Amino acid sequence: MNLDEIDKNKLPSHVAIIMDGNGRWAKNKSKSRLVGHQKGAETVDEIVTVAAELQISYMTLYAFSTENWHRPQPEVSGLMDLLVNMLNKYIKKLHDNNIRLLVIGETDSLPPKTRKKLADSIKKLQQNTGLTLILALSYSSRWEITEMVKSVAQECLDSQMNVKDINQHVVSQFLCTKNIPDPELLIRTSGEYRISNFLLWQLAYTEFYFTDVLWPDFNRQDFLKAIVDFQKRERRFGKTGEQLNK
Figure (tube, helix red, strand yellow):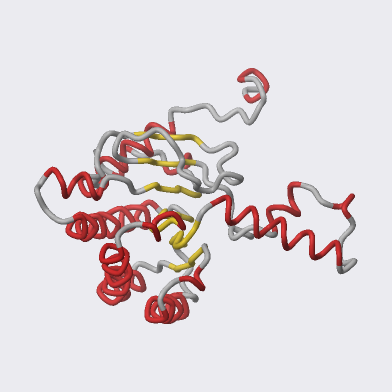
């Protein structure tokens, strides 16, 4: 399968990915979990590159959840170092491919070295106008929604907002993804069928694509298959097919 087989008029504007299976991939090969994460980082490079080639507007990667802090400390530290190393390695390629970088999540909990590298990378890429790559780091949707409720409540307490004015648009403006369109396609690798506390509000009308392929083995062809599958679907948003075809 190649890019010519993709209908450029029916691309999802925003693809979200739950990158699952690094640990199992490593276990299957009798290697450490960190080796699996390293291989998974190479997959990130490949998939982000093809998304940029397709001129997809947004891609959100679930890179590290708030629950992941409970993993063994050596693995957590290794993941933080890996993120810094990957940014060092690929920042020029991201820039050359006109990719912009954003981060969502409880970033204050990240190590200072990681926060600085992210801030520097975001600044370096901020003028780019192609794919916007969003890393969900120290992120969970329940955390995000809880923070949104606190912010909206404070606005009301400060008389900056009336309770009667709260609607779906207002809620969206207080989420991490403010000004980012909701994902049209969610991909989850490794054969798991759950969304693991990821973008619960934003995924309301997203198309889901599940594959048994472990993330380190997920490649360009697998990504294109997901795009083709998406393009075969009829997105009705609560309407009937007949209404859409009028």
